[in-house]
Length: 296
Image (cartoon, rainbow, N blue to C red; front, side):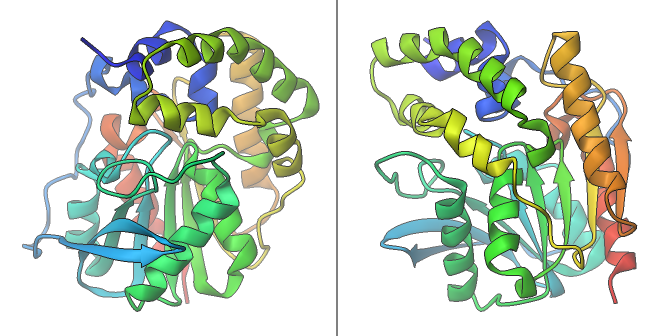
């Protein structure tokens, strides 16, 4: 039987905005558009590093290479395997060190009790990278919910970040008071249903991410991206939302972010659902390689 996270995630859209479309992955067939996903040259297999960060263990998977280090951060509810179609190609095409990891509560990483907060996840990532010796010249590649982690990381450690690719990411511009209220209201029934289900790692993670969602995202709406850090926005052709109003607001938020500074650009991943890393890995790879060309 499928676990309750998948069943509730497939039921209707709002929980996707809380986490990511990852819960839909089992029902998504990748479009045959993954051109450019064959590595240009052989690379070593990623090595697992289980490191201590803020009192718990996190799993990092490191493919060695040169700077900048490219750190791939999966959407909500997903682990490092979300980047299976992306990480080897980036390593092969760029020669950079490529790092994927499991955030607390997913994959091989420890589960951490209590509400999920992007600032905590950003602190975990910073601590884990420090333990790995990666202290600067970092390019963040962040999908969906991980966009909030990228903002938290860049806000706390701006000098460590060389650039970012935000892949259909949760951006502050989207979470206006009206939109956040819509999300909270639409999620209420699903969250109550999740509470009635048997407790699993996935349901606990979803509920942790839903905790105090309104106030958390009211604060997130006020955050800004450091002006000196270049960023690219990859936008899915089909947004996480079936409703026209929410889809329009999602696209507008991506456009507003990209238009806010001359060192930002926006790319549309044609023929893609919100799960861009699986549907259009080639677009993600190209966005990363294009960003690297902008760096000094």
